[in-house]
Length: 369
Ligand SMILES: Cc1ncc(COP(=O)(O)O)c(C=O)c1O
View 1 (cartoon, rainbow, N blue to C red):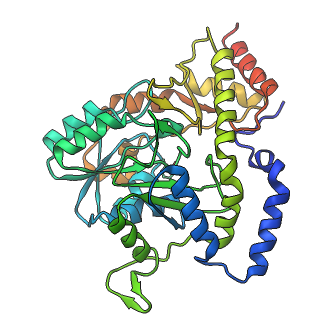
View 2 (cartoon, protein in one colour; view 1 turned 90 degrees about the vertical axis):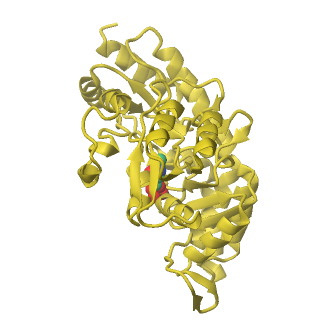
């Protein structure tokens, strides 16, 4: 059996006709940039998440960049995130001269550890922003993080790029930061057909600033008071995302069903399965296990036609680009241990029960069971 790590084409095959019709409609509309499809998606996505405002931008990276700048951050300001995220969480801001700081993770969830955050904020008083990442589709412990940040006067930007539809207690992720960023990268739980992203917030000033920043710093026609960017979500992408948004919850339910099939199939094996925290509605953007003999298991699965990935093999604080920050091996033991042990198994809405059974059987064979 050959099993891909993602299979977007198969996931989308039931709505292919609607997607093609929509493509045709936008093509013949003559309107391709920041038109009615983008406005409609922004309204629909804001309503889905449960916030007042949403602004479409060119990528999740830009959502983080513009979100951070809209909060008033500037070159030289410090922000904190976790080292086991995708590089974009840090690079979107460091690109503009902001300085990344890191804190370690909770071992079970691989998400930001509020006590590690507090330890850092106690010693580095000039950190202005905290960027918790809802990694793999599971929300961070937001009450604790919000409490720590409130005590140290630190703003919050949720990196929800992997967590569309995920909930913390009874609230959707994206509603609990000063601003939040989502990615529409094609493999995400809600993805478009190229790059795309969206910023959400309840703060009208932050929202107005994002609109200016994403369009050349233009506050009125041909009036440019601040440095801005060209970072717009295309009409075509917005229209296609509008076809997909109504299916997001159903797809997340399928992801959760597939995760529980894995949980059952891997029981009793020397494999650490992802733990869903009690406060969490995990949407399994990725199903990530941890094992002692990661590389050997990956090779074995590859030989049996099962594609896997590692998200992410090198924690950000050990990347050369951040060598000047003064971190090194041992700075964040839990994130470093996770990086050595994790494997992302195939998981998507259209993954079949027999495919999951085959993957679990193959892992079991690897362990001689
Ligand atoms: C946690 C996280 N943050 C940020 C990003 C950046 O999003 P994009 O690829 O849309 O720029 C991603 C996407 O891979 C991500 O997974």
